[in-house]
Every structure is written in C-alpha cells, then in structure tokens.
Image (cartoon, rainbow, N blue to C red; front, side, top):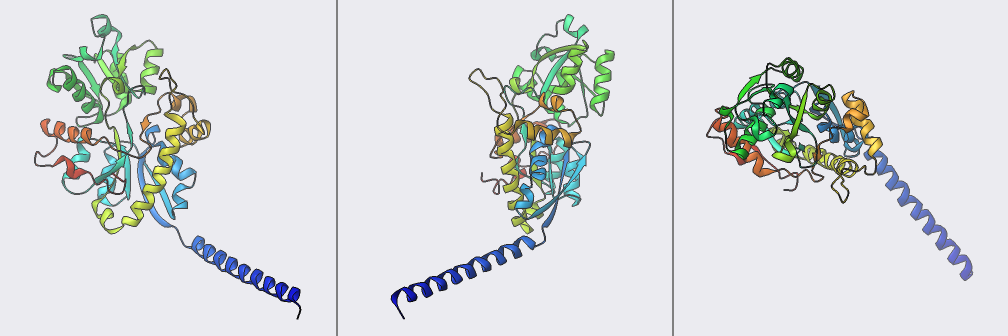
Length: 345
C-alpha cells in the first residue's frame, strides 16, 4: 500500500469518527430538547410593572430554561401573595403591601428579587390636587399635610407612599385624612367630585386627569421619595424543595429584566429618557399583555434594576412603617421577609 493510500484511509476514518461523534451529540441534544418542560405558574397584574415577566414569556426565555410558565392574572396586589401562599401559583410579582408582610410573617411568602420601583426621572405615580384645593394653597407634595387624600385601601402601596412623604416632611399619616375607596376608578370619581383634596395616581390616570382639566399634578413619587414598589416572591417551601426551578425562573427573569432596562430605562446627557434597542418590540409585548395602547403604556413605564437588585433598606423601612401603623406584627424581623440568594445578592 502506498503512503498516499494510507493517508487517504486514515482521513476517511477520521471523517467517519467525527461524523459519529457529531451524530451522537446531536442525538443527545435532540433527546434533551424532547424532555418535557417543567411546569410553573406566576401570578401578576396586567400592568407595565409586570413587563419583564411578559417579555420572558413571549420571547421564550422561560422555555429556553426548560420551563413551561403559565401566567395567571389578578386584579389587585393583595390577591397575588395570597395565591402564592395557597399554592395556587408558584411565583408572584406585584406591589408590596401590608398584607404581603403579614403573610411573610407567617412564613407563607418570601421576596427573592426586585420588580419595579419609583425612581427619580420616572413618572410612575403622581401627586395630584383638585383645582379647588390647588387654588386654596395645595401647590406641592409637602402641602398634603392636613388634606383629604383618596387611596385604594388601608395597607396599600398608596398608604405607604403617603407614609414616606410624611417621613420626609416631618409629619405623620395621622396628619392627613386617608379616604379608602377600594379601587382607582372610585378614587378618580371622588377626586373629580371634590370629595377629596388630593390623590396619588398612576401616570396614565394622572395625565388624563390633568389633560381633562380635573386637577393639577404636583410632582412625582419617584422624584420625591424613591422606593421599592414591587418584588418577585415565592413560598419558602418552593425555595427549599424546588430550588432548581427557582434558579431557572430567575435566569429567564433576569434576561428579560436586562432587555427591558436597555430598551426603556436609558437617559441622555440631559437626563431625558431615550428609546433603546428593541423599544418598539418590547413595548408591543407589554401593550398586548396589558390590553392598552402602546402610547399609553409608554407614558408610565417604571424603572427596573437589570440585575433584579432589591432596595433592601426600603423593604426594612416598609416593614417598620407597617408595624408602626399597627398593620404588621411588631415581632417580625424585617430581614426575614427576604431570601435573595438566588438573585445573587
């Protein structure tokens, strides 16, 4: 056999061997892809603050982690932690309330990462005065002391926003008259009817009220008192018994957070918000999920931390505030409501 024939035979053997390895790898990959996806359920509200969850679901980030995630939509923030505590959903993402911390004190839920927050430069929640109250001297957020303010419920995020404002300006919640009206539409009706002096309202609502001439925007909560509005949470039992599931969910969630942040949270040299890569695509996803027009969604997009980092000090402050309001057991250790190990904190 000649040297050339030997080389040719060795080359053919190498090709066959390489092809065999590639075939085996492809077979293993196909088998992995054929594995059934692990099912999980997340509870959320149809709000732009849930945007990263909608993005992760629509763009297949959960699926890439081997998860089949079902979205279950709720109509109030308190319903979501109750669903997590009962096992109706595996994860929840929504605003933090006194009710949430009460469930956390019973070991039913734990915060594992951040959701949205009120941040300077992001017009998410507005302080508004009725025209009559404005004309009578209610010109700035600090002037809300002594006024009647519409909220949804005692223990709500609106309640805490008033508490934060009071802490900043040297008064207490007792120095205002909170008028609980159950939902935002009833708050708006009371505001328009003059039954209250003021309201704290989401951006879309406050802008519409101002456009209609029903009142004046006094400022934005994010500029006045930045805080951790929402969080991603689960049951401690899920963290203990299904940690790989939580880790997969977190990876997909962080991928979507980073994409959301790049598209929506960028600013120019003057501090003005600018459109980033993927803006129109992601805005369309959130608009579809919330059943709102894209321009309405765009007017109230919140800030999210791209690494899901939580404002821990504010969460501690929230617990202490609710304890001072008699809404949460005073024995609760604020740090015990968080388990940020999966988020990398």
